[in-house]
View 1 (cartoon, rainbow, N blue to C red):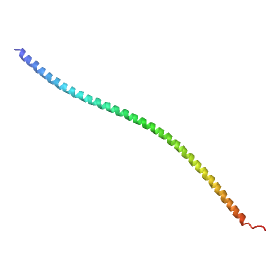
View 2: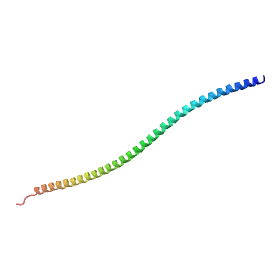
View 3: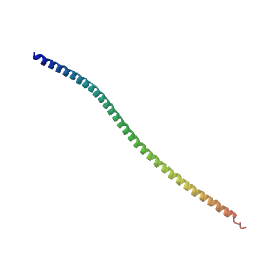
View 4: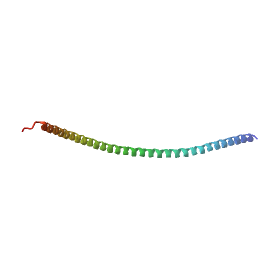
Length: 115
């Protein structure tokens, strides 16, 4: 008869242990599902970061090429400006010489003629 109360206590302990194991099992399954979700999100984030890194590298390369190209164009523009300035100065000198000759020939025509 003494074994009946002991058996009853052991049965209650077994039922409680089983209930706790079921709860822990459900929590582990939920944790496993969350872990798979987190793993998928981390893989997607990693892929996005790799893509962003590649885009930044391409942008950096394109920017460097654009900078060199613009530098060349600026040098060409400076050369063209210098050429235009030199041509303008030459034209101005030619105009001044021509205007000076016209004025001199008008002065000569205005001189009294010797008969």
